[in-house]
Length: 221
Ligand SMILES: N[C@@H](CCC(=O)N[C@@H](CS)C(=O)NCC(=O)O)C(=O)O
Image (tube, rainbow, N blue to C red; front, side, top):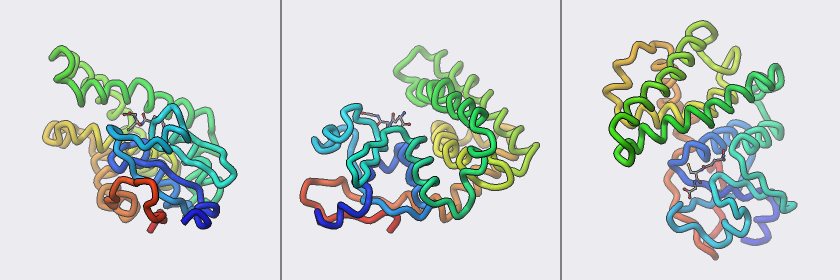
């Protein structure tokens, strides 16, 4: 296995992590190939921590030893390698807009999502308030989708859609009944299409956690 590991980068991943999902989506869309190493966040392998002491997934280790440890950078790396579906065009057309959008998504929105999701750890009103604040961003997304092509990335599905949808899915998962009753038609359609898509299915296979000595697992399969 070590000979083969020279050929492809290693992606440290966790199936249910939305950051890791967006990285896998871009890798699969770009038809790059990586050796996938699934980990458990509660039992991180020493080799993972050695590769990236910050110890968050996803992490991509390139054959030359370079380490990419931010999900957006992994997406961009994958799509700069190969982008048959034009996912990067939104980034190439307006990088400042993409950066602002992703900063809001990964910053305030993610924080509201976490407070909403883990509301029981906070005072009761924190969950309610976080849901309200998160919902403001979701309503903006609904309007953007409705006003444009039905996607966040210009004419078609692309970088911003793939970067955002795993988090919207997670927000819905907290209380699907509440979510499905919101008046966000374009957003419901966009999320529904994604969840039913081959793109999504292709990155959600279940893999056992990696252990030293395991044979290498090629992703996408
Ligand atoms: N900014 C990072 C965030 C990644 C992140 O926070 N991932 C979570 C899992 S969803 C994680 O690894 N947390 C570390 C832990 O739970 O120990 C990125 O975009 O890649």
